[in-house]
Length: 190
Ligand SMILES: NC(=O)c1ccc[n+]([C@@H]2O[C@H](COP(=O)([O-])OP(=O)(O)OC[C@H]3O[C@@H](n4cnc5c(N)ncnc54)[C@H](OP(=O)(O)O)[C@@H]3O)[C@@H](O)[C@H]2O)c1
Image 1 (tube, protein in one colour):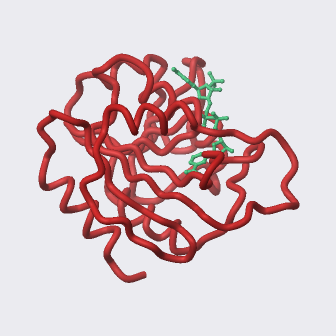
Image 2 (cartoon, helix red, strand yellow):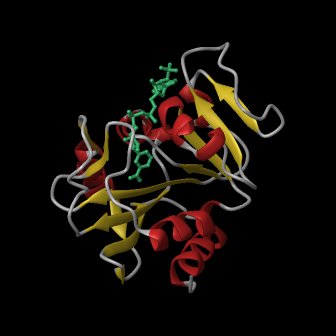
């Protein structure tokens, strides 16, 4: 089993959202996310799940983290409610952690067994959307944990003001097929 965290944060302040929104619109970043997660198992917090158009993302199984066991997903065939994050400590298959902040933090700063094996760290170096109102949501503790426990194993790719690199847990066996999939997805043309 391999867990991969995929995020795009703002340079400097590590903001990933303002209120419920992502404060930039970079189509190539969405496309990269789609290539990485297409056909995969996705883990999303309830707030992030609600922000997906029609509460879905095609061709992916979505595991929704919520403390509400009665939560009703939009698609009972492909979306699953998970109330105990620790069930991801040991389970079969690969999982892509898609946020939001509370979910990234729970995996990155929780028990060692919860830590993602791989991080796709994208960093937006442009301006935040000035029209968005609401609380800035950042993942600074995740970035601190990344710098402590992970090492960068790819080059830094630049596209449309987004710098992307791949990090892996230090001293850990990493599935090379998953790594190849990630690098191919990042390097692919839109
Ligand atoms: N830039 C990016 O890469 C990126 C990616 C994803 C999201 N975002 C942004 O992140 C923001 C949302 O982040 P958020 O932290 O507010 O919300 P979130 O992490 O998406 O979801 C929070 C909800 O998840 C559930 N939850 C959290 N921890 C849990 C645990 N340990 N066990 C079970 N359920 C748990 C709770 O649901 P219940 O209340 O139902 O119990 C909680 O209210 C938005 O601004 C969004 O746009 C950015």
